Image (cartoon, rainbow, N blue to C red; front, side):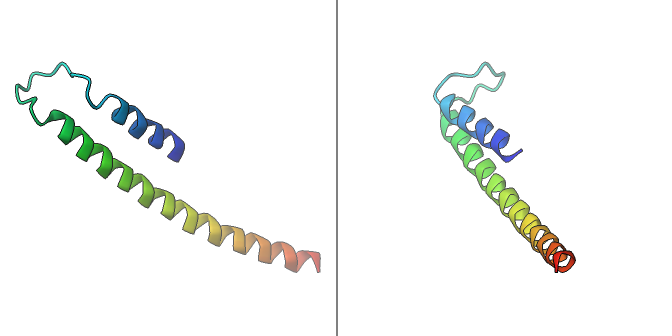
Length: 72
């Protein structure tokens, strides 16, 4: 899931300077605003990845403890 989200950020950064067809007439700060959106989305992805890492490391520790108990 994280790789897909990172691919979205990569795509947004690649399309940063390409003009968008929008109704909004304010296009002077559009690349800057899109860059800010991509950065904040990237920060959210990093928070999500950290949450996944913490969750799975605890589960792996529990699984290893149970496995060692049954093996001995």
